[in-house]
Image (cartoon, rainbow, N blue to C red; front, side):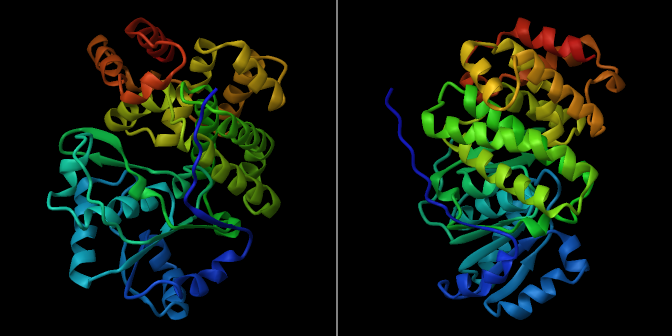
Length: 367
């Protein structure tokens, strides 16, 4: 087997390590932009950051749960106006994804929307970026992908570029202590999908396989604990580790079927990304059943693939996550649209060819 592995992001992991931000910023020159959620401004958290980090010159907070190209364009214009020279992204996957895109497209001639799903070449220049996740799920702090939405066109798609790797991932599990249970569930299960899909992806390789097994085991052992005990710092630390490692596990192999189907489920029905991925992961585990996947199930603590799938379903039920699409009253025409729109490029990474018949059968089982 031939394979390549590279990970350019410098990772700083551990409780309380946000305190190291001033010394990390000492290596950056000029003016910094803090990209974060409005919640962090309202609760005074960002004021403290600005007080301790004098190089921060501006804040951008206009970020929705699935960031739109218009929001990214607004951020790009702020970067140019303020002559920003580096970015600090503090938040969940939406915040960090938007920061990754804007740090490169601030050098672009075209507007942000032109780059979504078009294959248009991105600028070679980029701004330095420190990514500080406040959730345990997306792994975007160590990947080259960012996902944006164009609501006007009804399109949600990843943009992939080596430019998008942050310079530094500062992962402080203490930042996740106030994450609400629903977000804990969605992001944690997203990380589980990343680990599983990265493992069975056609692009799998031994280093990422080992990372996927480690991440999945941690998630199975800790996610329900942090859901029920949000202040359990040991479990939070384990989930932060799992999310980071899951990000590394799929960064090169890429995701597959569940992520491909998640995009229309989010675009059309507004289902949060992690919940949309999780909705189909146990179904696709049975479609992709193999000796290789059985070995994965064994290594993360299960005697069979079916037992692993039963655990995933039970976790969804226990965390009040969606297990079907019955409340949407999906018509035959809408079902056909779901099947068609699920043919996202990620679907080609799946080890088994996913046909329209498989997709239709899967969606029928949910409605």
